[in-house]
Length: 82
Image (cartoon, rainbow, N blue to C red):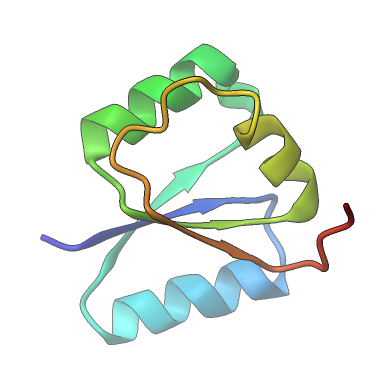
């Protein structure tokens, strides 16, 4: 089973990503800020997500993690500032 993560608040981009995944038979795993940082690591490890859609805000939280599991690809909906 192919899993893709979405770490974002609900938005138009979130909806389009989810719809596209459904269309291609990919299961989405929604991740929210309310999970907390320790549970975020746990979810990444348990699901073996390799691709994650993020926003600029959630990317900052994600970069505080020390263990990303099998995460290999990040796709950001927003412009990323240095």
